[in-house]
Image (tube, one colour):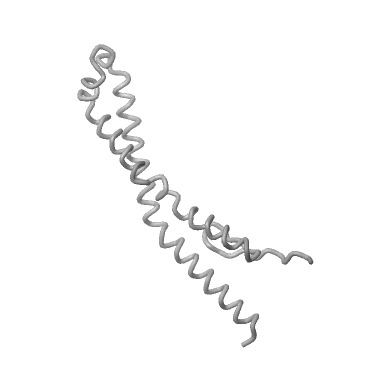
Length: 125
């Protein structure tokens, strides 16, 4: 086997592994996106109910939150999810792809969002 054939096989193996890693992240990413969307919608609906309640302006803030437990719980869950890093989990495949692109620029290559390699033309010397 020549050196070029070996290099080509190595590139194909790297590409397969990169696409495999990105595809394995996708199911958990979808679940995190669904969870974030659900909690965000619940928080928005509860916030609307909290804001249109005429009693909200007449009572103290803490008592108002106590009266609207759905809003309080949904808001707390949303804050907890962001503190735990859900914002990174919903974009995990693009983070992996962007870091791979950074490394591949040293080798005059890039990759798309699915992990397929993009070979750039050699610079003329």
